[in-house]
Every structure is written in structure tokens, then in C-alpha cells.
Amino acid sequence: MQQAAKSTVTLGLLTVLLVLVGLWGWNAATDPLPGKSDPPKCVPTSVAAGDKVFPQQVTVSVYNASDTNGLAGRTMGVFAEAGFNQGDTANAPRNAQVTTSAIWTSTPENPDVLLVASRLGQSVDVVRRDGLGVGVTVIVGDEFEDLARGKKSMVAEDDADICSPPVN
Image (cartoon, rainbow, N blue to C red; front, side):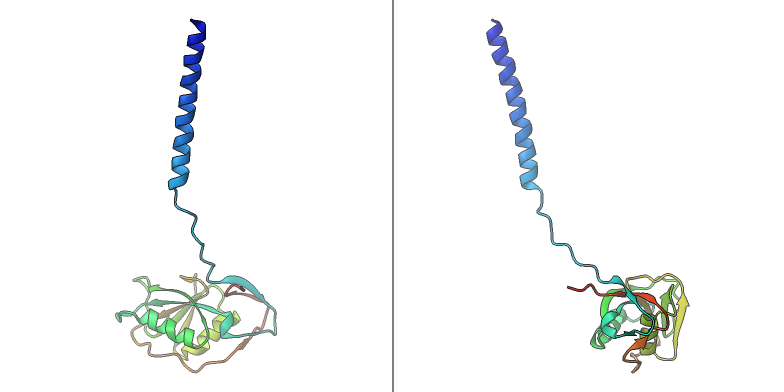
């Protein structure tokens, strides 16, 4: 009788083990495959004093503080046509009191900010505060019409870190 009890216990344990392995296998087989991760829109890049910064090195995010639907997307398209890299587009927070255009940045003297500001013309306000998106944060208001001619590049006065697109 002991032999029969040992066989029963062994078969019971093997059955439990088979069920557990089956559940683990089923779970692993039905999990979604890992997706391709999107590269970051920009990465911190050091610029030495005296270096030129070009639009291709600058990522811009545009936020709409106007009542015009799609203004941020259209403005982002104009920046992209001018050679800038596309960051984020969205509506600005409700408390954004911007009439024409503004740049929100913690580094108002950086060459990327100055280059973008030159494209927004004389009416741009550069406000020292955290930006909303990646790169240089531009807020456009009801009276914003189009980009100005601006500078083709900006020379860095001091060493700076800018947000540039990743190098492939």
C-alpha cells in the first residue's frame, strides 16, 4: 500500500507542476510583443562659446494660447519649413496670457532661444519660467500671424546646453 500512496503523491505533484508550467507558458505566449520605442525628440547637446547654432540643431515645441483651432500645428509646420525640429504641440494652459507670441524658458540667454526669438520678431516676450515641452517652448496668441525672417544662425556667447535632435 505504501507504494500506491507514493505513486499517487508523485502523480499529484507532477500534475500540479504541469498545470503551473502550462499557465506560465500560456501567459508568456499571450503577452504582447515588446514594441519599438520611439527615439527622444531631442537630447541635451553642449555648445561651446563661439559656436554657431543653426535651426537644424534646435527643437521647438509650440502651444496655442489663442481661440484659433490648430494654430499651434500650423505654427509648428512653419517652424519645420524653416528647418527647425518638431517637438510637442498642444493647447497652452488657460492662464497663459499671451497676445502675440512668447517663449517660456529657464535659459533666456541660450543661443537656441535667441535664434527662435529672432524668428518671432520684435513682439516676442521671453519669459523666464519652465517650458512646457521639449526644446524651446513657444506660446502663440490671437494676434500671432507668421514667423519673421530672423537670423539664419546664432553664435553662442557662452558655453550652453541646447536640446538638439538625436544623431542617428
